[in-house]
Structure formats: C-alpha cells, structure tokens
Image (cartoon, rainbow, N blue to C red; front, side):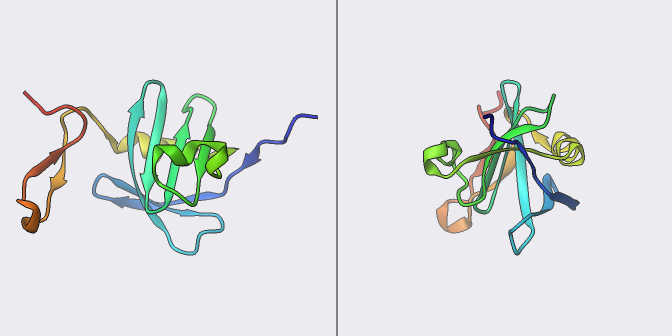
Length: 121
C-alpha cells in the first residue's frame, strides 16, 4: 500500500532581506531560509532545515534536523511531504541567482565578499 504524502504546515511570517521567515510545524522557533534553484527544484536552507521542492506540484523532500545536502537522504532522516503554495511563492521572490552578492565574511576572516555560485565577471 502506498504511503500517504503528508501536507506540511508552514506559515510564511514575512521577509528578512533576501530570506523568507517561516514557522514550520513541530519547530519551536521561526526559521529564516535562503532559496536558490537546482535545475527545476527550489532548494531552501536555514538553521537546521533543508527542503528540495518541486515548484510545479509542491512535493518536497525535507529534513528538520539538518541543513546540508546529505540531510536530504532518507537514511539521514529526510521525509517526503507537500508544502503550501504560499511557501513556494515566497521562496520564488527571494531566489539567489549565480554571481549575486550574498554578504561578507567577518573581518576576522578578511572581510571578503561572498557570492552565490560562480564569481561575477
């Protein structure tokens, strides 16, 4: 018998610069997520959370106990679910693009700029 796909409860609380602030079910504190495209999928990452979302149908593989790609493996605790359209739309508004400035390293590490993906030319 096929396993039921769970609808995740995710409330979009707003935006914080190029991050989406959300309240995710079972997590006590809101999370600020960055988002970028990986082929046709949206990757959203934040403090101890990661999502890989198909924006066409809202199906996602996610982990609420890890923030790196290895945490998208079911052996590492990843699960499948469906995310709300409001969440997908909010992520699409803040998508980082190749060469976009993300921020700067702390001055103790040289204060260099940090770019998403490849360096701009």
